[in-house]
Amino acid sequence: MKTILFDLDGTLCNTLEDLAIATNTVLTHHGFSARPTENFKTYVGNGAKMQLKRAIGESIAEELFAQMLQEYLDYYGTHYLVKTAPYDGVKDVVELLYQKGVTMAVVTNKPEPMAKRIVAELFGERIPKVWGNNPDFPLKPDPTMTLHVMEQLEAIPEETLFVGDSGVDMQTAKNAGLTAIGVTWGFRDEKELAESGADYLISHPQELLDKI
Image 1 (cartoon, rainbow, N blue to C red):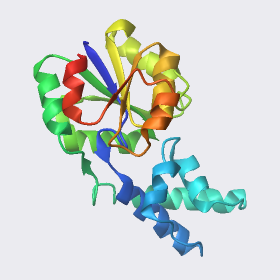
Image 2 (image 1 turned 90 degrees about the horizontal axis):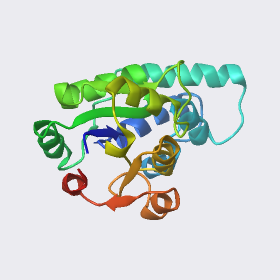
Image 3 (image 1 turned 30 degrees about the horizontal axis):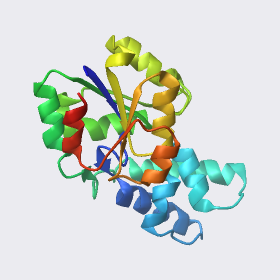
Image 4 (image 1 turned 60 degrees about the vertical axis):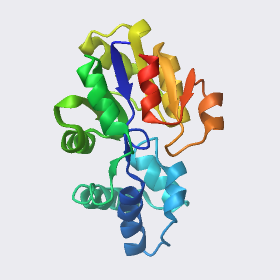
């Protein structure tokens, strides 16, 4: 394989605690109860707006929600690498893939400016291209953004892997005609990955080297 597209949260990096802290800071400020960190494994994956809606868990006025979303983005924007770090073995595998000449990019539903900062700080030039939630494309599992990335990278579907930890990622891969690799160290379980179309499941980053 010559190209690998990675999801970010739950795939390359464990971002769960920072996402939970940022969300709970906003929730408690507005009188809502803090949610257990473990709950965020099912809150994340469909963008910041849906993450916050799931965490709130009830209907609120649109103006209040918009205010809370902005507060979340502002807080997370300065507290995004407090606890966040690559999963064990990920940086070593990224380095090996880079040395082998594999083109790597990130395709995430995370807000694009934040995704770019995280990837740049943790992986530098090894993963130079990052696409995230922006006004130009619908969120995953819609394949539009992924297909745009493929075009920009001049990647061939038959030579491209899509690596992620959720059903959204597996569906994205299938919708774009790519091989779907589900990682079991992330936020969702094997059942969700398999039912969403994973071609392969891997339990350690090193196993990715066997798929190229």
